[in-house]
Structures are given as structure tokens and as C-alpha cells.
Length: 182
Image (cartoon, rainbow, N blue to C red):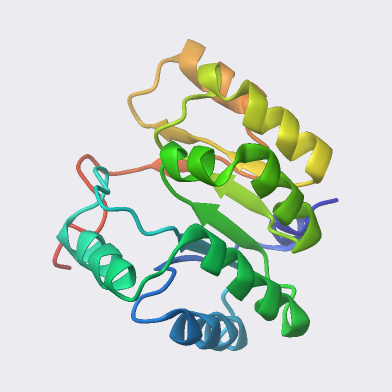
């Protein structure tokens, strides 16, 4: 049973999103440990991207800061390697498909197995186009988490349910993330 499934089996988990590398990877590593100590159950690590289309100004700004700090996919993986020395909190990487593709899907899958990355959320990769990452997730033991909207059709929800492992990310509000002031 995956760590994500184990968390969901025992409680309604508190899942927190942070942008990796904002303000630095050292600070992100410390924040992971601090969040775990405060009772967070699962951490989504956002991979900074120059054009985070689905994110509002607050999260976009965090991506800019992380990129200015020279955060890369490779450096995030190395940070996770260090985190795993002290922590087994479930970690889910969230980012644009282009970032995973550029890094290398097979290479990422191998790293996910080696450094115990628990899952991925790739918002711009629909289940219909995700066969390769789904198969890699099954073979390398990481969850593939897909997004569903309140407006998703029954047919679409069925496709998402049949493709997702770990959990399904429900988009409960219209608009971009991090855009509300309260």
C-alpha cells in the first residue's frame, strides 16, 4: 500500500502546496520538516515554471522567486534525496508536463522509485494522453493524480477515476489558484 493510500485510509489528510525553491531549496527542505512537525500529512511540491498558466499572482510570484534562486528539476530531486534521510512524509511533485518531459520521464520514474517520491500531479496532462506516465507510475510505485472539475462530465470523471491512483485533485473553484485574497 502506498504512503498516500495509507494516509487516506486512516484520516482526512491535510495536504499543503509549496513551491520548491522559494526562497531557496534549503528553506524548502526546512519547511518540509516544519510542516510535518505541525501535522501536515502530504506535501505537494510545485516545480517552478516560467509560465505557470493555471496559477494566480501569488503562486506565479513564488515561481519567479524560485527560478531566480536557480531552482531546477534536478536540484529538487537532490533536495528530496536529502529530505528522505530524515522524513517519510508523502511528497507529490506538481508541475507542467514539459518539465517532466524535458527532465526525462524514465529518468524521473527511476528517481521516484529511488528517492521515494509518492506521486505526481501534472495539470496539463489529461488522462487520455498520460499512458506512459501512468505505466511508469505503476511500475515504479508512484501515484498519478489527475484533476477533476465540478463541471466534469460523468464520462470524463469515469476516465479520471480509472486513470488516477492515490487521490483525485478536485478543482472546487473557478479561476486560477492563489488568486483570492482571503
